[in-house]
Amino acid sequence: MKSANCGCGCGVAVSPGREYRQGHDAKHKSALLNAAVGPDRAAAARARKAIASRGWDGHLAIREAMIAKAAAKKAGRRAAGGGAKAAGARPAAPAAPKPPARKRDTRTAGGGTLPDLRLASERTPDPAV
Ligand SMILES: [Zn+2]
Image (cartoon, rainbow, N blue to C red; front, side, top):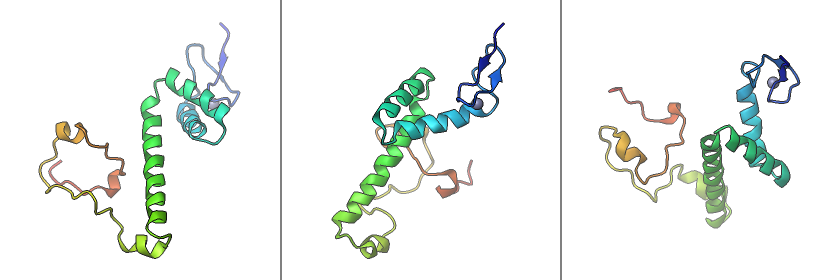
């Protein structure tokens, strides 16, 4: 049987039935995500197709949400008068007051609100879990 080359494009042969060399799927995914949100539209379209065909749409959605969040933050800072001083005074967005801390419920966490994109290290430690 003819062996194929690794799907990430590194040119290494992989065993039949396998798409990637071990660990290269993550490398490829990261590269595709970067290309999908990159400035090259043709490359982005190709990357998005590849992402969809591998079922990685969720990863792309998260990446896009993070970029949108960062862009909104940037735009808000600019609208606030262009001064980094004004934005630096308030690290957290005061617009949406957090509900009082209560037992985490995954049903309410996913219902209608934006997904929590913070890193685990940035979250308030939950000793109950
Ligand atoms: Zn590879």
